[in-house]
Length: 183
Image 1: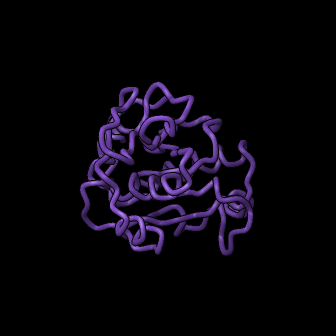
Image 2: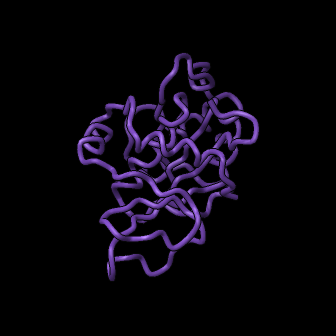
Image 3: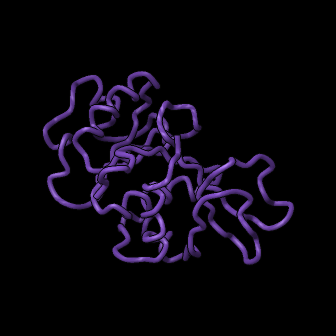
């Protein structure tokens, strides 16, 4: 559970398409009960979206986890201002709120998740602080922040198939991200 001294809401961004999808799940799974809002997915979602929640108001079930676990809510093409307002309302009711963002321009604390590619494949511009995901052996992180354990292909497949990880070293490593300053 996200407690005193922790962020009730964190954005997650990655230049890597796979990490941009699985990192928010790992961050949410590390606290056990969280709402994951996907603002990076575009506007072609089916079902209830954050845009609809902002327009119609949240339902009782959207204001409360109801049971332990992770709930997902697609963005639905909502604008930055409306997203910021409704995310603030939802964050007051959930133990933790994780927001997948396409860029780092929303006014919330955002965690950059950077793959540590070897040699010339390394990104040209890197954030000063981040969560570092090794892709190959021997690469040191260029800045402060936790280095995640190896991300196993089976775990990625399970998360992309909608099966939430129960126990894994990779998910466990995300717990300290909630304690770090990201503003």
